[in-house]
Length: 235
Ligand SMILES: C[S@@+](CC[C@H](N)C(=O)[O-])C[C@H]1O[C@@H](n2cnc3c(N)ncnc32)[C@H](O)[C@@H]1O
Image 1 (spheres, rainbow, N blue to C red):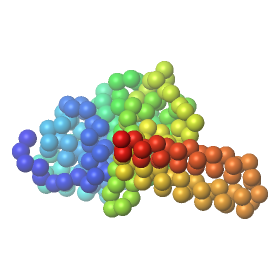
Image 2: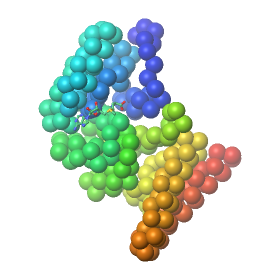
Image 3: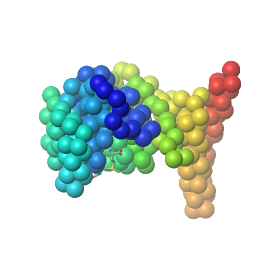
């Protein structure tokens, strides 16, 4: 394809980098539609559906599709994947939403339990809840990376249904597949540790000492991971 027409931010850029070449894509909660439009304009996908639960964002996505002449992208009013047929999407992106909503959307689409389907997930909150859900449902994390955008660290998860490949370790729900040898990975883990430590302080105030201890143990695991990652980078 020709010259790049617009830039994706780093967060959506990382999501885009996990989409396989030539696939059909469904972008759930597309809002402005930038991700599927960008991928289509760069010849990276064969077709795409920009889906959203609200008509307002879809209208914005439609305007952008026309503006950028991205005629391989169509829009769809849909709560999660309810209006998407399994044969319409090989790769599914669900980005910029809470982890619990992402888990609900996946749970409601049992056809995602197919090794051929790739899920690219970018939760804004409830990260551990999402990873625990994936683990319980047999979705393995094939890849997870963090990225820094406007001084905030985001993580993007590439998951696929493969119960045999699920390989949890202590702290898995909080650490996932994050690579701590990158600065973004360490920043992401540091933010998680700070948030968990605040939670542990709250629990101590409420005299829930066992729960507080459990969370402090996870914080220690995260700090260990950060230290290992820092050493790994120096080597
Ligand atoms: C913060 S925007 C994220 C936009 C884009 N995916 C990104 O990451 O930049 C969240 C979008 O998800 C949509 N949304 C919320 N719940 C949804 C659902 N159940 N199904 C589909 N879209 C949903 C909202 O309408 C909104 O446009």
